[in-house]
Amino acid sequence: MINIPKWFKTFLMFNAGHTYSNLSRLFLRLFTGLMFLQMGIRQMLHLEEFAHQAMGAMGLQFESTIVAIVVVEIVCAVFIILGLFTRVALIPSIGVMLYAETVMASATSVSSAGQMFIFEPGYPIMFLGIFAYMLLAGPGKISLDYLIAIHLVNEKDEAESEVLEKA
Image (cartoon, rainbow, N blue to C red):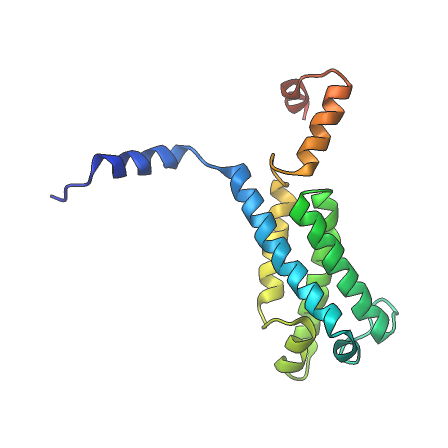
């Protein structure tokens, strides 16, 4: 019989029922937002190179498409990192990743599509999964969204628990 230390059993059993969901959501927001921001900054720095590779979307010219993508990536990444209007910022981010996936799927070569979005195939799907989770789970209590919500609740002199019970 294996002798497992008591502290290890306690650690496993205690953590099985107690989670750090708000801290986990903060980490996911920061990590994903920084990755998304990094992609946007790289594309901004090499805008001329990417502009001729971008397919026109929604009737936009090639240059306009890549500029719109870069703006969405940078602005939405900052909002996601801060936890400010997180769910609203996720919607255009999901749109960019859907566009990236269609570019990857329709590209004649994987390298040209990967160069445009600075990642390998599969990354848009990964981002879509993370963004879908964040859209469903929300930003958590460690966010500006939560602070704004608490402020709005306090203006109406309602307790947080009363508002949560109504939802």
